[in-house]
Length: 422
Image (cartoon, rainbow, N blue to C red; front, side):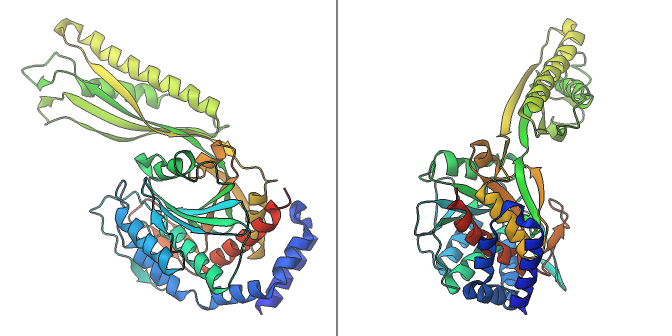
């Protein structure tokens, strides 16, 4: 049945002209008995990976606290046959499956979640639906890496490309892509990576080919502070922060290129009857255009100065003055992967092979870093479906989850072929 389905996919692909992908490469892949057997094995024996995904998700991995999950993944890579699996200086899990050639393809997923350590991460299972913080983002990606490794090992697949499995730290929030920045800029692998894949969430049709750039700031306003009644009339950092927020929230931004901003967190102060000494807010700004983002950043910083100056001027007679520190806490660059690249072609055709028409888009993921450096990179979804990311009721449905691993296997094998053409 599997072989017949493959032939049906092949016929459909031929009729669609393959978008410049060589027909011979498709025929060669689909006619390989080891690939057919591997696809059959993935579909027939996927159930243990559901349990493994649950186990991974229930290992806490809060921001800047991924060590326990990193150790768990390192040990699983070793059990899967990669004895060199280790944790690097940044906290990433690194596991190399050598190929016979010189090119290196990174296959990655991020270890961290957005959830603090006190979060209950127990997974609730109802039928094929799993619910828990982090079960989708990115327990799906992590289990996909392990399943792919098992398929490669059990099927005896030998690739020309070196496959570097990586579990990255710091993908979420204020992590600022710490792990992948280290991988490409400071680690022994810097300058040695030819292409990069991040598996993040679900959806075997999704291919992120563009990087949404972002700038994140923590704005801290500081003053002398005092009693709300007795010291009334002195400068108030909270009032200045309110001015800043009002100016910032009124900024107009273009819809094309899509440019956005948000005040995500605010805090500070001592009590309701105290003029605070310090207040702060954290801001996220994004755009698909470096130029549009730079313009927004400039106007944001102007709003910061204006808001503080207003409070200082209004309370000038008190002889007190505020100071402000807009600190850059996140900087994700933009970039693009060409659809003519071997990596994109492998991603697109592997999606078609499992019955999905590729859907491309732009997002902010670990792929931002290699894209910004001109290294082909894509972020893809695993099999199954899900929703509610970054919400307590985050969910994942593992029906057809095996398609994600089948797609990954096909993608790796097709990349081997297509990269040799370029």
